Image 1 (tube, rainbow, N blue to C red):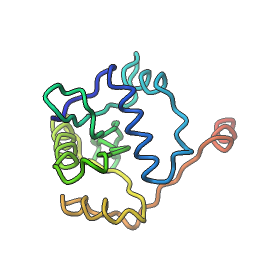
Image 2 (cartoon, one colour):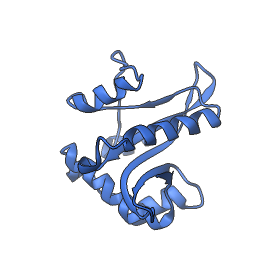
Image 3 (tube, rainbow, N blue to C red):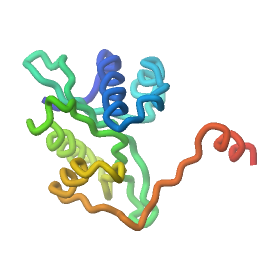
Image 4 (cartoon, rainbow, N blue to C red):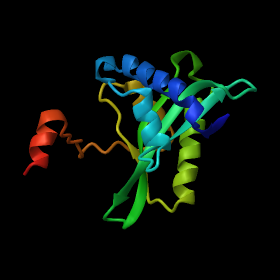
Length: 159
């Protein structure tokens, strides 16, 4: 079952984020807390949303996650959705959860009048790239992600 995340899911969602980070060999970068996640998903001004994939009749066992937020295309003059993270537990892959999460997210994008759904994938993650291509995604090889964090962000913010 695919459903929107609820506040009670926050511990399991953070556990899925940590599992994704382990898979990507980036666990040391996960510094966010349950309180941070709860505030930004469900606080007075939510900054992101999440869909979860659940297994079992109770809907309490989370096996997958799609965390996303709105962006905007100046060329299309329409909003878009940016998928920050898609993750399905390795032992649950091949059961259709990833396709269901992306399908539900595409449905949300269409319902909200978005012009596109986009995300980033690590260069080395060939299984993910193959999966995304099988769903019709195109790799944007001429674009590179730029990022400013930490001290560089603080310095830039003072200019």
